[in-house]
Image (cartoon, rainbow, N blue to C red; front, side, top):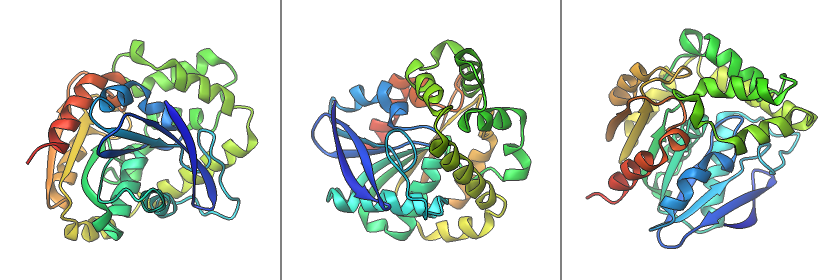
Length: 273
């Protein structure tokens, strides 16, 4: 695994890279980091140059205090990374809030993106209807590091999985470290508030997606407690060039819970005609 940094979003962004060939950018969700891709990077790297950034304020990347930390800010960071590394047109995979940020980036700079994979994406589930559910509130408590013990952090994180035995301990370790990091808490709270607000009024966003012609695959865990799988129908309706694939016995993190199946489905789509 290679590590280096690139300037984007007013910060220095840590990139993890593995493999060679056509580049594949992997964008994590809210509260996570490039660590979320560790189980899938090696199989991706068999044929691709897999690149996983830590977005500002997550992992080991800092975030400027002046940054708004809304979805558009992170979308601009994705676009800046693609430009800084001269990657376009590139294939991109985005998970959860990272999927929303990828869509925003592709909508504004579509010539930089060849194909897109959205994994249990934010941006299709209205905030008041689902994100206030028990699982979402528990996950938010985890993100802002309120729990005091590793066991409690792991228990809350496991709600993102159909099979809690598939929880990746590397992510749990990162959440444990964040609990005593005041800056990490600030970023998480602000970013959560911004995406919450964004998802209270999704109609304008969906209308603007009508012009997005980039081929898109949506992968959704059938047992996702955070963003309900039924909202894949919304994605089917508002994205003009989309295919939906549902994973049974899978929660919010297919790239961790079912990495081989996830990589296979992703590569079949990216390498397809």
